[in-house]
Image 1 (cartoon, one colour):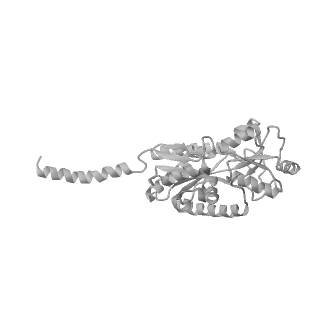
Image 2 (tube, helix red, strand yellow):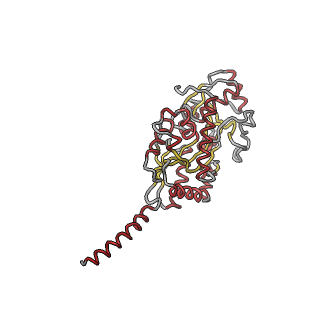
Length: 329
């Protein structure tokens, strides 16, 4: 091989190399992990899988959901935040894990949440029911629940997705507004654990999202006595909003959102955000969420997603300062 040939091959190699690398680096070029902070079956898992299925079709790579429960969402959040910021490790969390936990459990983090976690976009809003069990519990309205709680102070048991979760705060705010006391039964398994508590009667009441309850309501295992939403649900026209039942400004709109490590490149974030936008318009996705009584609601932009998250954290700093709960129970 002549020196001229070698030189030409060398030049061609320099040209081809960057082109090949560029093709390989186009995001995504391999499967993407979506970490969720709960076990399968809850709202966060459902949201991740529905969006993940459509992102696979749109972006051409699998979006694989992995459950990393525990420590109020901190385990999953920190694993995501410490991952290489290349868009291949994401996190889908909710108002409890990504707005309340960073406030009330700030000292449990080994990362700086507000500096190392970035919101890609809101995904969906889940209405919640104020739900009662039908297992030896004949309460059919908010008024009946309050009357019974006043008659038997401290005896009614309510379940939550763990100490400091939004169902815990919602029930505490409700109880205080009603002037009653109830017994808290935290369940770290999330919505699936709360469902079990209600079905067997270990707990008698809970704030729980609509997506995981429809089948149990139809089966007569539990009864919604109010809905936490801006208006009544079409599917449950006889269930009043909590505001209509006499408790305005009580209850949390249960959002789900996607997060990434803070140093993720802007072009990767733009690809993800565009993918989520396209996914949100797919009829199959809209139908899947509609069946769960869920509103698909993305952030207006990547910048708005950051502003919104800061606002949510600021709001929960105010709430947790006003409503003191024992985090060690």
